[in-house]
Length: 441
Image (tube, rainbow, N blue to C red; front, side):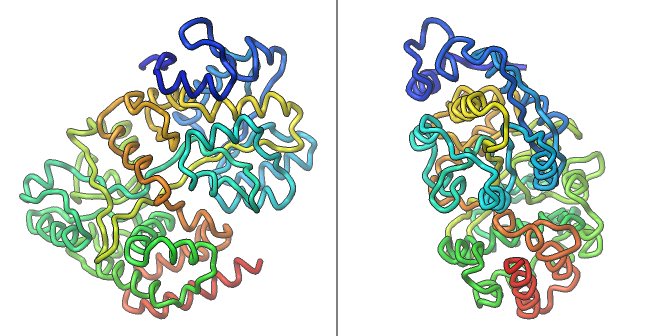
């Protein structure tokens, strides 16, 4: 495992500006305003991470402890962050910091009065180190509560280089070229795509990429806020585009039935596992981690990606997701909590996890050399260069009842659409009815 960088010029300069350090080449830079200034304090951090992700985030927390003297304790919440954090607050045992995985949940926490605004130092760091869009997604009613530390790039199509080479096709530049290439791959003996239809969320990601490219960012923003109805013709058009893929049995491994019985890890296995069934799988940059850790693939050689291609006359989409650090009002260590967020806003903190792997940062000041391989550097570069054209995962912006619940709302309705994609207009009407109910609730 590579040691974390502490001498990168960009990281050191930004850190000095953010945390008030007096030198970059001398003694250790300290979060919180002085060497070991937070000794004796403990910062409790709650988040969804477990396994490898938790271990890698702990390295970041350990680096913070090394600088400040503060101890840290991470509490894994599982997927239901809202319920776990709410119960801890009610029980008088609130964590100091929570890593919030959805824009909608951050808004919910702020509206309940659970959050403290970011400190002036952290706000300055966000302004200096991030594209404005990340400040927007971390803000509720104009107040900045969330600092986006870890991001996902959800506009990547992963493929087996061997499969595309054997079919004689190159990574496509447009959506139509992608489907054409898919048919060529299918003719060579493999299905084109492995689709994770058993999990509803990958289907929402398919829709979001198509919609952002085809309808444009303004309508995307309006639909995400439900200021545009799901019955709008732009939604029907995007569903129609998606339906062309769903109904083509040559393009999907196992056809529609096979897709509906394939979860996300299974979809990656069908491309990169010991018995490949497809040449490509669409999902975020985290596909690389599964291909590498579970199936031993060398990223860049055995597994690679191309950007989700532009649909029609639109631009290539960049859809993201991420985890925002926020300080809870009821936490017992406010000073240490704010110091942690000030540290997380620096490129130095991002470099710790970047070098460990399985991580992307929206921090523009992080040196891309911090990432351990060329493919991850390419995905990170694509994310940060997209700047304000990045759009956050639409379903993550919606109330959980619509955009984040198994067997309900958008997840279920897109699974139904995968099963029978013949009626895009009818599916749009059902989506609107579900959205109205969830947003009113």
